[in-house]
Length: 132
Length: 220
Image (cartoon, rainbow over the protein chains, first blue to last red):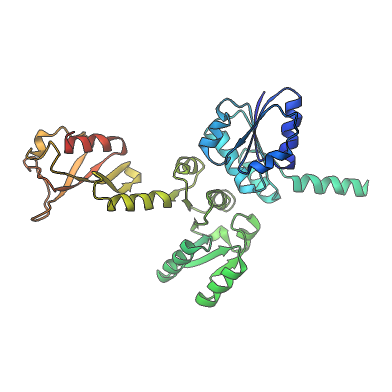
């Protein structure tokens, strides 16, 4: 499948690399080219400079043909906005949004976005580890 | 009316002041403690320190009874989220978002924001108005009607100089409202009004017919 990832931080770079290894077509978008250092030398996808809340940048990243869009920047609001662009403007079939703030995550999940709150997931995981 | 303003930059500051002067109940949400302190010192307890995108902050300031939310931070994404949280979690009836990227107007409308104000567009239009060679200037958008009010300047080179209004093939959605000649009195044009060089014509049209109107009024 064709995947566009916004944000080449630790998680973004790792996800890009994993999907690339599995043979998917991956494009990573970041507004700081220095972030691309995190991609392994073997990475066969595309690393593209651009702002993921800008429709033109998303088009350059090939969002019109993408099967999946994942937003992984540090900013919850940027992730939320780019995911809504992907879903409502470009009709990407699957859109996944990282939202740190659990309250915001619940709301956007209720509004129909596929969301993950690392805060919630990790706290739960730690709790189970400590109690179990 | 209870109005919540998000973002205490220059725009938020003057908006807060203006709304308070009109006698509304206004609360400004601002993340920066120093800005908050300054505003409270100057205007009293009309500023609350917090993130306007966070549901918890909005709960504390009683967003549920707010009549309007105006988000005027410098970041489009923050304004979008503040308005969406207000709308979907607290049912605020009217949300207004400032946008810097004019392209976002369509997206925000689609996502349920009631009004967007593009500061970039407003500044561009104001500058265009001051560029004397610009033949068509956009004056006002009447959004509910899908109409715009424009100003077309007739220059000495316009091939329509000396022609009457009825001889022009104006787009049918367009109405000429006012003629401001370079000399003499401003008047309402009729079918027999003759165009003269230096005339400034105020017209109502649709965004799509703007260019056709300009061409009809100025010739080539």
